[in-house]
Image (tube, rainbow, N blue to C red; front, side, top):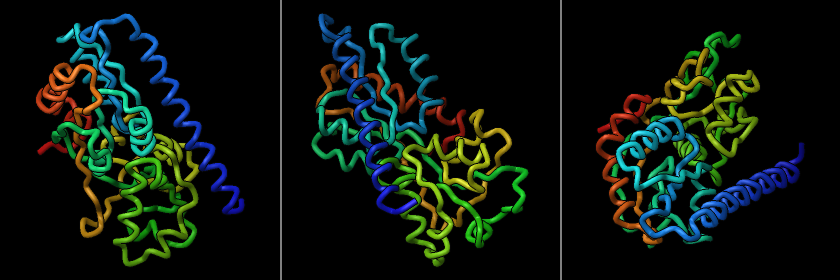
Length: 264
């Protein structure tokens, strides 16, 4: 496949993701017509790799605060940020990396720490190439999958790790697929499409992580990302948004910890 063709496919996938997110937001707005401010669900933009803990968070929060239902929109962090900037709608933003909150600028009223995201490479436990260490991943013929740096948090992490490595050329030569979300990456390695994929450590607890094990990245080049929640200046219900943010950084932290995230 030519580079031009790959870029065309990447652009098409990016546009499709944005259209889907805008459509989801449109549905929310339509459902909210006629609701009072307090009745309208809080719209929470969440990085795709956080869906397991966030679904549990949603269940617990809504049970305790029935008057504050949540509408969670999942996607690649870069795509979510683009949607927020374009629509200037929504209440809260929880990307896979705190850098996206910084990039949101004046759309953020306040942000708070939630948990840590640790990048690792996932390989099949029965991988025939016997990949055990980070150096093994850079050997000739090893097929790697990483995220697209222009679409998801794990993609930006991949770029930072590559740039910090003293074997950049070998690293880049082994990358055969760039995914739009981290969820795609773990499926690629689980299905045997690639030998290893850069994912978040907590994902190995997912059902998709069964039969996979982690290969650690040297701490000198790894990038541990903070997960933070931002209350947005565009929120139509700032008090309710602040209530949810406070829940997430207290009771919600324990939920994230159970799902394999680091908590300070």
